[in-house]
Image (cartoon, rainbow, N blue to C red; front, side):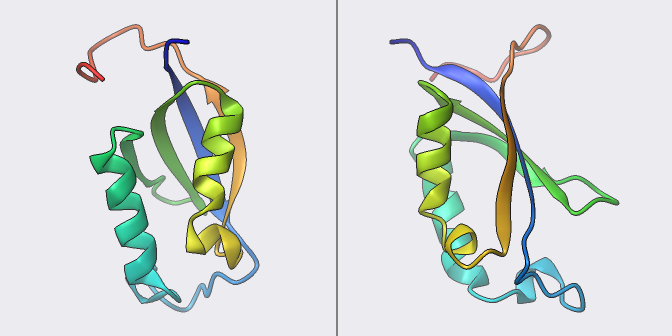
Length: 101
């Protein structure tokens, strides 16, 4: 099956400490390492906080929504409820390019 592109919205969970910046949250380094590994594998294409919200936008390449959910479930921030996946939607890129897989 050909990989598809998905837009993923993640939001802060119950263990997120609003008094601390993102880089000072519990287990920042393991989370950052995990996300960087997803980029290196070609799963994660783009990602970052949506300014002025409690959400993060990720653009990923996967076979289906279940693969996206499974891969993100292994993140220590998911396990510890610092981030939750709120939405996974197939995305049809119509303008521009993300490059070859």
